[in-house]
Image 1 (cartoon, rainbow, N blue to C red):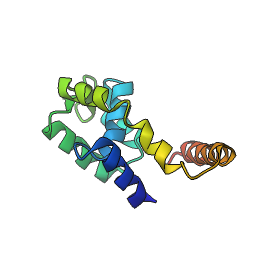
Image 2: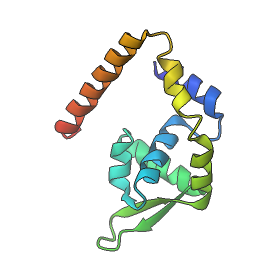
Image 3: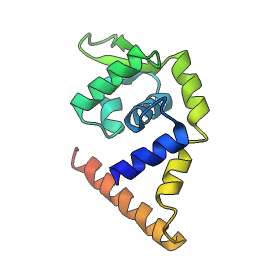
Image 4: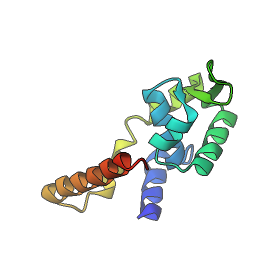
Length: 129
């Protein structure tokens, strides 16, 4: 399933950015100045992978990472101007990835699938994972 998603993601969005990078940028776009640890968690990445993804996005000029004003050990994230431009360009393309993934399902099956995924996510959130 992950390979299928990656293939469709590349078909729809090209190779400018990976799916995990997009997920992290979407979290930061939704909450500018979010703490890095929370952005990584909210994007569904483990800490190690998330740290690497953030570093690559900073290096590519899509993210700005700044020291937290209250705790120098923590970092906060913002989209750079390039990151905002990238996300603006991808905003219309990204939903097609999910649409293609579930295109073989009937409308009732899609509804059930989305409902079950939401239950999984809610369970993960309530367990602290």
